[in-house]
Amino acid sequence: MKLLRVGPLGAERPALLDADGTLRDLSALVGDIDGKLLADGEALARVRAAAAAGGLPALDAAGARTGAPLAGIGKVVCIGLNYHDHATETGATPPAEPVVFFKAADTVVGPEDQVRVPRGSLKTDWEVELAVVIGRTARYLSDDEDPLSYVAGYAVANDVSERAFQNERGGTWDKGKNCETFNPLGPWLVTADEVSDPQALGLRTWVNGELKQDGNTADQIFGVAEVIRYVSQFMVLYPGDIINTGTPAGVALGQPEPKPFLRGGDVVELEIEGLGRQRQEFVQA
Figure 1 (cartoon, rainbow, N blue to C red):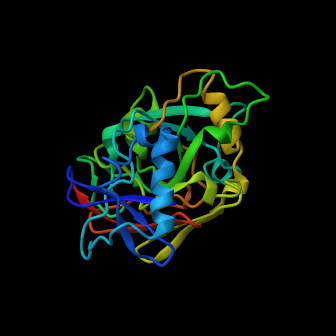
Figure 2 (figure 1 turned 135 degrees about the vertical axis):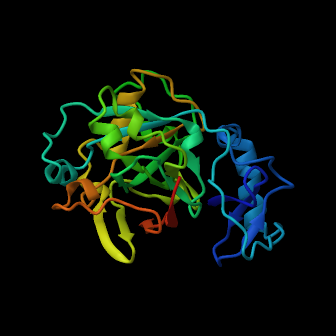
């Protein structure tokens, strides 16, 4: 299923995108698309049954905003330097273990919402990423457990980053990762049963119409299953938590000088095979 949330900020309605591209209203079946729903197998089964029976009303959302496809996000765990080609372009040594950092849940916005270039920023950058949405509580996963069985679904994320804040201001990366609007998510949460292999997905980014990133999750240093198992050794993953799994080559940081960092007025478009497409206009904060 392709689950999404449509409407003004703070008043989104849960919806489903059916096979013929029609939006279906889920308001009568579920309160929202959140961790509680994803963990409730019976509720999801009711949604599937209603969709299969054709009993869901169409939702007239012409011109309506698409919000982030997940509400009530607990935490956003991010994996850095997780593509071989991205490590190469930035001159970094591939890490021996996953590099873990966090984004606050309030950085998450809709897939077509404006993104604010922070005050004082000279090095705002784009990063298309496969976002993994957790559907079952995961802690200390062992080698004989299947981490992918803990995944509710997948989505497109833009891990927007301010590189000077991240790399030149001391301390951890978090200052360059947590500016407001720095995690567009969506348009859909695609349930895990529709993604046969998360290590075979093409990812692309265009900036002002020019293709900048053209990668594949097959190039990840640490695959999705390995990342989930690893992270579960250090923290509990709850339904509705998100893991951003890294970006391929083609970011502004990896380009020759003068590096084409983002400014107000730039337009970034991103897509992942089967997971949909985003478009953001960048504006000065």
